Length: 553
DNA sequence: TTAGGGTTAG
Image (cartoon, rainbow, N blue to C red; front, side, top):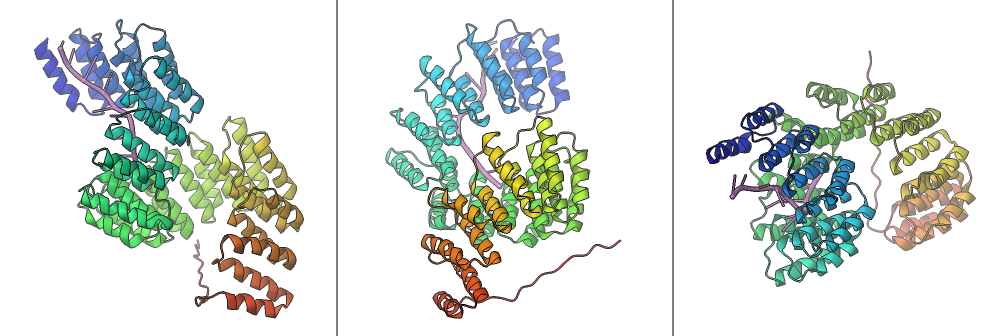
């Protein structure tokens, strides 16, 4: 038996993710009468799960008469990793009815599944069960809880779990630092980091990543640079996760020179780091360089994945270069990536933004499975092309198919209303968004509503809408209102709105120029001069430049 | 007798 174990164990280690090999090994176990042994069954379940075949894994599980906690955990984890959360939860509930007690790994796995399924109610319930079973202070269970609460935006509850532990280990410290990182509380993350150092714990790659997560924009660049320095000092600057996060952090801070320097500092950047750099160029508006690096990646013989392709397609959409888009579409087809919903939706978006709506719709219709992202892409495309009623028909089709709309769906519909000037339809969908679908209006929804109402001359209603919002009102919403005042020539209201904008951002020049244009329209040249004199720092307008790319048959 | 793995990136 021992010889057989060693033989099989070496097989298990090198088998990889090939279903054929897993099946071969499973057959070997059956032949050796070992397939019902809980240890081997656990291994086979893991291998089937790794090859993406959870159903086979469940089949193995069903045939085992004596189920150990390892066996239960392996199948629960298999379902959770396959994002089949309902199966994972029902298996966990079944486990509770047996005499096998869930251990700290079971709870850690179920807790993570709760957060990935955005289920805070269940998370609290599972947390309660863990406490009752005496695992409320277990470090494995607690680090999973801290992460789960943080990812659900409940960072205060995460900190309560953390402070319940008298001597947190490094993973637990990292979990809370990352928790504050996701939530954007860089100062609290730093406090915890300092406390961790005082407790004698040395940072690792996870710690650095946790700190970098909170660097959201250029206002926190000094924090980002400090953390970068820390990674150099600790020798963690070659950690793959740290490197990619440094690249994306500098990209968020719009410091592409630093991002590129980090990228060049490592010997063989992985695909995520390449993507971070390409997405960085794309997000900072340097679409040409984004595509240049995509080509470079291709020339180095690396294969782009679905995330990278979607990011590149977004760049192409902004450049409105359908020729390049078609090239990438060819790449997608050649590499069998068209079945991915994210890629197909990016193709729909690219074609419609390049002006080829019919090609976007044809990609959409050829998709085997459409989800909320793909519906949003096609609704947005229809709206951008002025086909508002078709956009609403698509929305109805989405509802009939049981796809639940999200914030972006309503942005796309409101945008469609703006393009077509459908004021009443826009009012109705804005109401339905909250009342019928429980989606809270975000600043972009208010921007569309203000544009829609203001564009139709309903400035008073638009103004009242902004007045109904709690302070401080988002700059974009007030800016949209000011822009409407400009087109309607309402200088009195423009002054009120502009005043509110100047109060929140005294240095902003865009809105001052807008107000000066409104005064100019009224012939109030003294006021124009006053504003222009007020704009200091040598504001200079460069001549506009644009081009149109033609495609002729 | 063997064993899982809680925290990280585009």
